[in-house]
Structure formats: C-alpha cells, structure tokens
Length: 610
Image 1 (tube, rainbow, N blue to C red):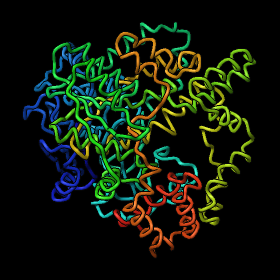
Image 2 (image 1 turned 90 degrees about the vertical axis):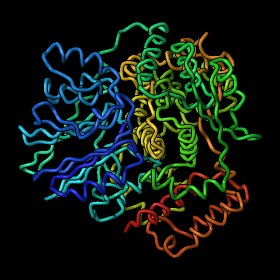
Image 3 (image 1 turned 180 degrees about the vertical axis):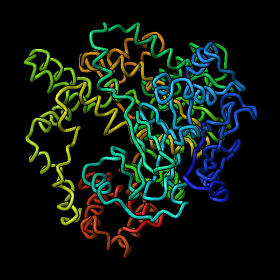
Image 4 (image 1 turned 90 degrees about the horizontal axis):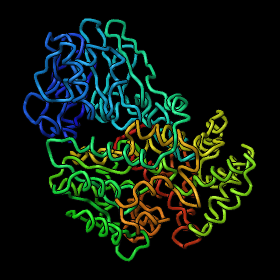
C-alpha cells in the first residue's frame, strides 16, 4: 500500500516535494525516477515483502518498464507461478513485480487477471507511453490533471495542487452535492480541472503527443449478464465470502479489523477467527454510551466469541472541532455527514495500536440491499410484476420488522413522474440560491437512484454511482491519513458478481435485508447479530452534535461570516433560519447544515476561488 505521483516533465525537486505531500500514505520508504520525459514518485507502506527489494519505482530486468503502484493483488502468487512458467524471473516476493511482468506478458489486458485493489502507473519506454490503471470498483484512488502542456497524476489531489494548479471550485459538482446529495459520482472533482480516473478504467498517456486515451476494461452490468442462470446457493455464497476474507489476510504484518457490531464487520471478524484458530486479532470500534446508536453490547459479543482484543473510542463534539481541519484536509473534498469522521477516529485508534492493515465491511450494504430504502425498489418491482400476494406479504413483514413506513413512502416517491420528484426535492433545498439552482437544475441530469425499476438495478447503481464510490473515497482517505491499508472483503469481484446476478429474494425476503448472507453465516456469526434489523454502522449523533454549545459557536461564526454571505450557492439568511429551526427542534436539518459548513470549510482549508 502506497502513494503514487508523477508528471510529464523533468523536475527532481518537485517530485520529491510531491512525495512529501503524501508521505502519510507510505512512511516506510520513498523513491523517485526522473528522465527528460517524465518524473514519477512513490511513498511505500510495506505490507508484503518488507525488504528493500520492494522499493519503488521498480524496474523490469531490461529497465524498459518502470512502475509506481498503490494497492494489493491478492492472487499475485498464482499469477507469479504462471509467469514463471512463461520464462519470467523475479527478484522479490512483491505483487508489484508481478504487475510489472504481467504487463510485459499481456499488455493492457493484464488487469483482467488481477483480483485486488490498485492504482498504478507503468512507464513503457519502448512504446513511449504511461499506462495507468484503477481497480474494478475504485477502492484505491487516482487523480489526474491534463492541459495542452502538462499531465500530472497522484493518489491524492493535494499533490497535484503542489504543481501550481489554479485552485478553482467546480460549480457543477458543488450543485450535485448540495442539491442532489451526490458525491464521487462523476470523473469531475470539486476542484475544477482535476479529474479522477473512474473505477474499472485504464488511461494511456502518449508522452510524445501529450494525449490521453481512456478505456473501460470492466463493465459490471455486462458481467452480470454472463452470470445469469447460476443457481442460488448459500453454501456457495459462504465459500466465496470465506475465500475473500482469506485472500485479504495475506500479509507480512498483523491484520486487524474494524468492528461496528453490525452483521458485516461481525461476520468478517468471526470468519477471521475460523480461518486463524490461534492468531491474535485486534478489533477497533466506536462507542457512544447512553446513545441510541451505541453498539457496544454487540461488539462485545463478537469479541468474546472470536476471542479478540477489542479497542474502543468515543469521540465528542469538541473532538470534531479540534480535528475538523485535519479531517477535511485528509478527505480533500467535502463529505455528506459527520459519519465519516467516526471512521477517521477509528483509524486513528488503530494507528495508535501500531496497526498497518485492517479489514472493513464496505460494500456489503450495496450488494446485499442492507439499507432499508432498498425495500422501496423491491416493493415497486413486485407491484409491477403483478406479484400482489408477495407484495402485500413483504410490506406487512417489513412493517413488523422495522416499525416504519419509510420504504413504502419512498416507493410512492419513486413512482411519481420526474417533475414531481424534482419539486419534492426542491422543497428541501429552498435555502439554496435560486439563480444557482436554475443555472444547473435544467441540464437534464438523470438521477439514477430515482429511475431504477428493479432491486438489482438499484443495487447496481449503488455500487457504481451513488453510494459505494464516496464510501470508498472516505475509507481510503481516513485510513491512509494514519498509514493504514484498509481491505474490503465484500468487494472481491467474484463475490460481487455472484450476489448481484441473483434474484431479488436472494437479498430481501420475509421483510429481512441481506437474507441469503444471514443464512450463509448461521453458526459463524452470533445469532443475536444475525437477527438484527437495525442499521447503524459507524454513525455519529450528528443531530445532537449540531446542538452542542461549542459546535453552535463554530456554526454561527461560519454562517455569519462575510465569505459565507457572499457565496453564490446559498442564501445565508435562510441557512441561518434553518439552523435555528434545527436548534429549536422544529425539524432535523443536520444534513443540510453540515453540507454548507463542510463546503465553506473546504474553501477555507484549500484556499479555493469560487
């Protein structure tokens, strides 16, 4: 696990400076390569083969290929054996070297053989190109900037900014964030001119012509068509999950796990113990004593069952204020709630205990329909397929298990014509500047989560568009801020394809989410956890935090400031009224207030021009 940097000109001092900017991603080693055409750097977090042989940038035996790489290829040993049979010779035990020779053997198609997470750049001197790739689901980040003269890439935006890029806000993305609550859904970032290479894509930069070509090597929707017809089998599901966890335990340093107390992280920890009967397992958890969102009793169940060493942290509103600048600087772009700060604190806790690798449960909710709003898509699908008996039966079961009508209300919303959906959404956004809304609202943006007609279509959108992308971004930025590699077993592509290719009742049935996975983990994960119907995760009491006295002072200071009042995005007076309504408990407007505060802090921290 590392950080990578590079640009298409010679500047030794600058590439060293870029490395220093993202040193937190790789405190164990750093290196760079410079010639007349290119400068490329790397900071290394040593996980596999801790020897100096893992130093990067790494060269092929003929010095014609040079790689800088961030990630882990979990099936690298199998690919290594295949390459040895083809005559390639290795100098290290690293997966980095496997990528290098896999490219030499198979060219751009090498990425189709990899099972893992990655963002890498290979300088091919023979072809005079830079070959850049990002993993199938975008677990590892890759940003770039390209104009008529310069091409710059990095694991983090702050390194690109070090190259003197003009810091200008991207109003189109700000609109999507404030109006539609969308983040990381596009190749565009909040920084105008800086883009992200999208998941499942390769980028080929021609050093002579200064041109880029982007190719999509992985299309999940097309892959799922090939999987149709495979029998639903909970035993196969369990096997795939166990295999995924086992792959992610490959390491030359200890591997721990985040533990929220929910089904996902609990199943990961219990599976780790099944696969490793005697090894030490450390878990890291968030607790909020006396709060409804506290999950400590479930965490302790797992710790006792799996015989782990549990570590806990309880952030307070004052901690959020103290950490806010560092947290947002680490994230680089605004985030949708304080929930992501909770993860930041858990990663800090793990860092304090000397951990370098953690497993985490990201992706499970997106493939197994773990969020209760997915019931709305399931109900809608049953209704339009004229399965009325099942339709009413599932609604009754849902109501009994979840004590809510939210999913039913959301189903009715999904069935409305587009103009009414937009009108309802606008009702929650009246604090925004009308001129700003009109400038971007009518650009025919298709909101994918509103148009999905089936549960599986909604799940596909959640993986590729509106949920998972920003969760993975925040996961990577928080973990790497504290030099920790986060591995996500639920996003093994073989597991994802298997689950998403199955029918809706594999995910939701009898008013229960994650139906097949709960059954598959019976006997592994405690029954009390498998029977949980609530969904919390690493949540924070955001609604109450925004009513805390010290937080109130910070919020009022921001929304009453001259810079805030001058922003073209909102009506500052209306934002203030909204916050006062929140304080007086006349509605929960935590999400709206947080986004305004977060965006204003982003302008300040990164010195952005709007």
